[in-house]
Length: 275
Image (cartoon, rainbow, N blue to C red):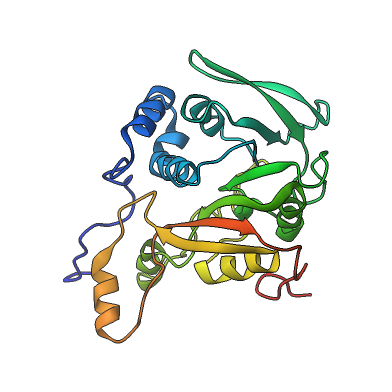
């Protein structure tokens, strides 16, 4: 930290109030599922809670597809929305293209129809307009070649006026600004690994770029940011606003509640494709 340059909170700690304003029934379900040693879901606890909160406010019915299953979301919905028929995707290509899988955490178990596909090169093996809702949370940033393939597939498998709930880290968060102002990279998780892995981020979005991409994919609706992983760093933002920068959309996670309103408008939007 620079001498004489104090910040209210430096990045690096989990968000202080993960369940602020979250309905008690969601809190109870997540606390029962997320174990203390589960570092990933501990770090994503706020994001999972808000995803369920946003989804349930849409009063979902019928068939729901979760892309890149988290396990926690399907098991939570088993309790919070038991009438939903939940399907999931997986990327274990050693197993059949479609079938069932057993999702389990502790004593909670769910058998779910499962599709094992590469989401940016392979179609989900279902008819057009199969699903009422699709959840795509913390997936799009991992796409390496063609994220619009996945979004076009989501459009195809959703019914007219079907809902898409999407989340992804925000590259223009207060956390990213904090890093850049101190001469470090703004990325959320771009590090390479010694062994090839699917977990690093290949493209991190701003609210602006995500809006353009989902519009190109035939969706309309709300897109916004909020802090889900860490508390926001406010002092930098206050100073920049005092200098005249109209900073908005600085939460560390982007949320989108979208409706399929048409077919794909632009298969290769220039905001993320060079050609």
